[in-house]
Image 1 (cartoon, rainbow, N blue to C red):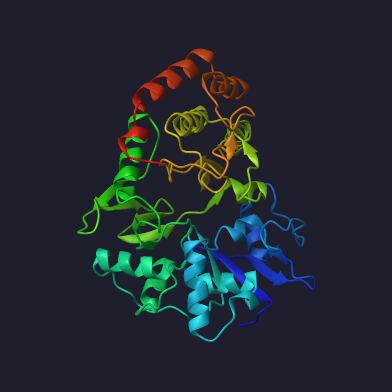
Image 2 (tube, rainbow, N blue to C red; image 1 turned 135 degrees about the vertical axis):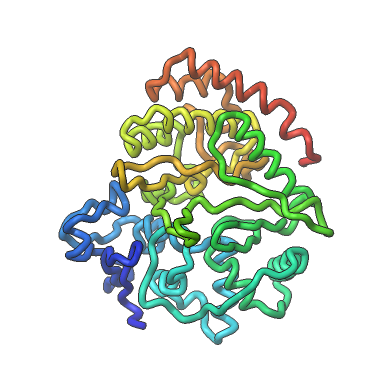
Length: 373
């Protein structure tokens, strides 16, 4: 492949071209065809204009956020690096542009990259307990047979927990140090969120002989038409705002404002974001960073709607604070801060209070069902 150039596609339409600059940033330009009737693949950073867009931020190793969203992180990146080493390559020498070529057509969302590195083979799901054991061995830096098969099923995934993906589902396995009932806990959290009026994907608990079950969630970046998966273009808050999601860089005021702008003041979307904020506070989900909020592009209305909620589970952070602050409070936000965020977003005080009370009531004791230190 040309190591300094990659073409971007969406539904087999040529969106544009990425090219590495002399100072190792990755510039982007829309194709002529996309300029005629395409949309902004990143609503703020990349308007549909005939120009070369060069990133000024270093948050994504020289990439624009929209393309960095296609790259795996944590678990997926570990698998990619192991795959590269098994082929005699040094991961540190592989550029972000080359990593996009490795993603090819396997990434989350709708964007694909050509020419792709031909590193994938057919892989079939085997026994989930066996896969979980292989994942644990990889995390422990042990040699694993059939590494390529594990890579094919999880090499494009994000998040810290090991997982495998099919066209329809994502199956998560416990990470080192996780409690045995991690999968059951996440299933109960997602069920509780649904009971709190939050839109969530379909979830299942796959049986296991090693634990209480493996949490499984239907992919919302795919729709099925005539039995075939259709990709959906989506972006995280980190990508949209070009933010380093590893740091505390947002407040829920920002998320509410962003939702109103992207959805064109769609009241139901604003309420959804408010409900997620309340749930995260009352259910003790403090790992609410900028990659855990996503919007999906609506081609019919030419706007963006929040994706179904995901990664809702008990979690904490190094300092024990919310990664996204609530009216400036990350340590111990409560009803006062929640109402202040809702009011600033233009929601009626009566509705905000009803939602706060509803979610507070339905999450009582949720975090105490498990022995979490």
